[in-house]
Image (cartoon, rainbow, N blue to C red; front, side, top):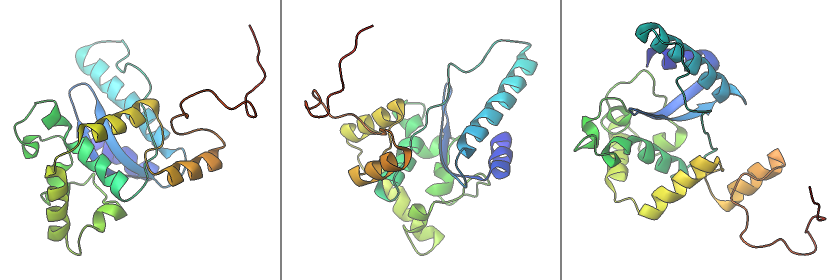
Length: 200
């Protein structure tokens, strides 16, 4: 946690929500500039691997692969990500109540406990005029029943690293990046836009 806080401060990344699970980590972050999320993850990965290898006298790699990231639209989509992240220990049946899990931002975001790692997002701040109002509104949101379809949709976007948000949001991102950032349309392309056939 100390390493993550130091690195995010240095790289200019604001952490809004997190959970440290036994075999993976979720972070919801906003970088001040493009490329800073990658710098944070690289630096954190190097430091943590070195720490584990030194402590347990090992030399192997630690992570299974690259981190996965997806862009998130603000407002309701972002708050769904907050909730998804902080409910991980409950879904994994590691605790009976989400507040019992020590390694997440839930205590800060829902209960108002100080956490030096957390920097609230504008969408979170808009939940209320005062910290108690925001905590109360956020706690209510987290405790709402989450539809299985919402969970699968969010997981799918993260696994495929697709932008998570409205169609308009995805269209804007695709125009800026000049590449697809969402699921492709099902079915064959129309003959007008179909590329010429090639064989290898």
